[in-house]
Amino acid sequence: MITGRHYIDGQWVDGDSAKTRDILNPYDASVIARVAEGGRAEAQAAIKAARKAFDNGGWSQTPAAERGKLLFKLAELIERDHEELARLESLDTGKTVEESRWDMDDIAGIFRYFAGLADKDGGEVIESPIPDSTSTVVREPVGVCGQISPWNYPLLQASWKMAPALAAGCTIVMKPSEITPLTTLKVTELAEEAGFPKGVVNTVLGPGPEVGAELSENTGVDLISFTGGIATGKTIMRAAAANVKKVALELGGKNPNIVFDDADLALAVDYALNGVFFHAGQICSAGARVLVQNGIYDQFVKALKLRMERIVIGNGFDEKTQMGPLISADHLAKVESYVEVARKEGARLVLGGKRPNDPALQQGYFYMPTLFADCENDMRIVQEEVFGPVITVERFSSEEEVIERANSTIYGLSAGFWTRDADRMERVSRALRFGTVWINDFNVYFVQAPWGGYKQSGLGRELGKIGLEEYTEVKHVFRNHATKALNWFGA
Ligand code: NAD
Image (cartoon, rainbow, N blue to C red; front, side):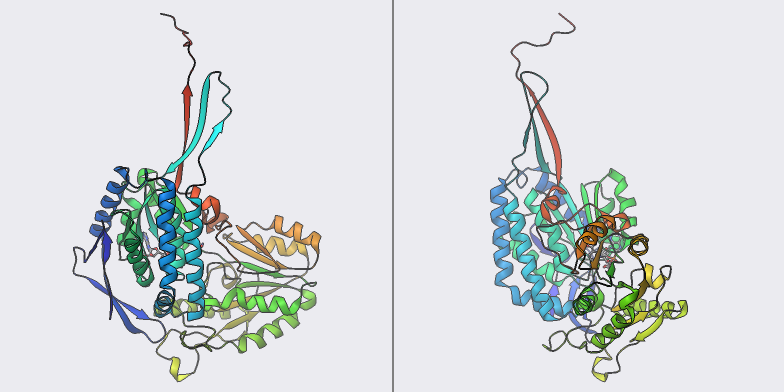
């Protein structure tokens, strides 16, 4: 049985409480690991360690090139243990091992990208308007960072936070989701092996309302970075007010995928599937809300149904499997309740809407790919994040109408649209109020480009150069080197 402990101040510890948590495999609800379950005391100890490691200047004053070297080393170790990490991620989340392998490739690349960026910004010299003076702007690490990650892409989301924070010279306390901590623990081990000084990287296990709440409230934390649901994000934002912490939030999304009449229909159908069914739709940027123009609406719904019927559901370790289970019994119940809501709202169920009949899948948290057509803008199934293998399709007539409808959401994470008209590409990409807009594609991301949400999908950006800047404070240094003082008040 896999076990796991907290990593605090360079030590693996059980923590104050003797509590443990069983980690389940969503494929069959079997126990795959037993890990320590911490609370506020463990979070406080980790914050203290991170504070000491930051305030003694050791890490923040380490030349950026040296910090980069350690991150490069960590990327190498992730590559060395790539297969083990991928299998661990699939065991913990149920997603196909092929998807987990892609995640691990990305993760090594993320550490490499921020390792390379660590020493690239030497500050800026400003043209001072004052004679005989020099004005420079430098970026310095924010300090101690609390980092809270979700269960859908456990290590990927953690690495979006760990890599830039460490590159910037911050010290961190990472809290993985309590139901999927295994790969974050493994990478913490690799950080130890790479040689990060003690107190720089700390990982604390435990529930959000205790460990996460402590990180959000504690005045020893300078920045809290959170990825997860919108309600938790609001709680964290309120808690962070205690010491006016910097707050970075990556929250949910309800992401429109718009298909115009002139689109390449076959490709748009293909990508409508790619947009939703990876990891059983548990993707913050899932294109779960599809809007299709009148002229091709019926054809599109028919083609989508045919393709969705062929999705192979099963064990993520079986090479034939295309879609695994949902993460937990609670989450399965949430998806089921949304399907009920959609039925009552009058959405037309075209496919799915139930758990699979296959006897081999009854122990796990499986749900069938589900298609609702003829949906309306104000239905809850259209407006709220289901976070499961459910697509809704709406019909529209004009470009103006679809822009208005796509923007009529509290979220603003991502959107995509399909057309061959170059002028429309310009108009629509400008009009959509989302942090990422894809033209003739869906769900593409890479470390070089920023990621984050407009509106209630979040605050700040991860990835890209801006992802590093989030972990820095900006300091203006002004130096007077005039030989004569301006003796205004006279002696
Ligand atoms: P969640 O909000 O339930 O939990 C996320 C993390 O917050 C977990 O580690 C949890 O322990 C912690 N937490 C819970 N309560 C807390 C509290 N009171 N104080 C501090 N921390 C607390 O979210 P989830 O169900 O794990 O993840 C799914 C959500 O994440 C979806 O809404 C999804 O859209 C979002 N998400 C967003 C992005 C993005 O890039 N915008 C990426 C992945 C997931």
